[in-house]
Amino acid sequence: MPRFTFNLPDIGEGIAEAEIVAWHVKVGDMISEDQPLADMMTDKATVEMESPVSGVVTKVAGEAGDVIAIGAMLVEIEVAGEVKAETAEAAPLATEPAASIVEDENPHAPEPIFVAEVTPTSVATASAQPAAPAAETTGKVTASPAVRQRAKELGVDLTDVKAAGGHIRHADLDAFLSYGTQMGYRPVHATARRADEAVKVMGMRRRIADNMAASKRHIPHFTYVEEIDVTAIEAMRADLNANRGTKPKLTLLPMLIVAICKAISQYPMMNARFDDDAGIVTRHGAVHLGMATQTDAGLMVPVIRDAQDRNIWQLATEITRLAEAARSGSAKSGELSGSTLTITSLGALGGITTTPVINRPEVAIIGPNKIVERPMFVGDRIEARKLMNLSISCDHRVVDGWDAASYVQALKKLIETPVLLFAD
Image (cartoon, rainbow, N blue to C red; front, side, top):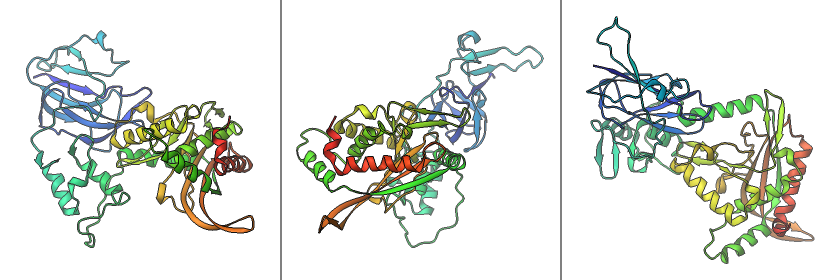
């Protein structure tokens, strides 16, 4: 019977390799056309590979966590029946890696190779025919017996675990275990001691680890912190929300972004990217603001394009849209790259101060901290005021301490006198 070799297709511009996040098939499985084969992660997004043919899986490329080069064999399938093939010229391997069928009944004869048409990518949220044998459904939760048993041993209620495709896998359980506690989750047996567990660092967690390590390894960080009185801007925000009509409800973040963009005009070195290899700093005219967002899969940074051209209501709408897309896994690769400056906030959990890590190759990252109400001298009086520490981390190769301090002082003036946010 003919063998069909599914080579990992080009799943993004400039992508040379991808990591196996999870397998949906194993050797010996009978699969059908369009059935999910594996989840593959690049530095931009996670995509689900689907089989273009039906047959029996005879070989897989590796285990979850392994990295596969574009064009390398991902899955080999023994094809049942005839398979319609295209000519090699229709999809040249050099520009778009494809799958091939090899007829091996006569090992001494030249092997005819046919390049089959393969859909390059299929996002994880697309509809696909699930692998049926191992899964079982109880209520609204779909998971394999192995996942259910593991969840039971860990005291995890599977109804609390989110899965992008609706079918809970080990990777989804791993993500929940890694981040569930931060999101307020408590195990069913909170006081019970469980055995140590070795969790392989893979997928989004590996990307975060690699990026953060590279940032700290290459960039000499320094952090500057200033206390800002946000009483006036909070009062203005309350008034705007009370009269917003059908507009989205404002948080402090859109107003901070307006201040960040207005101050950039005086301090363009803050809105820059540094190419280490070329030794070139590019100061960008447009502010493409990265917005660090916590998701079940890990920290993602969707990008608000041309933030300087948006008003507070437009920013509020875009912040909500991008955050929801990141958390649901539906954010496009273009929405997760190309930032020139990043803001990171832990909201009410923001702490007294933070020392955020720069989103390389940017040169600065801004971190507002939580708002606290404290007594403060205002002239010769003591008043209750709302205060917030604002942190900024900078690349000392590009940004001097004086520049960072001056920029934050400009932000402080805008935030403490919020009418300036709306002045030309």
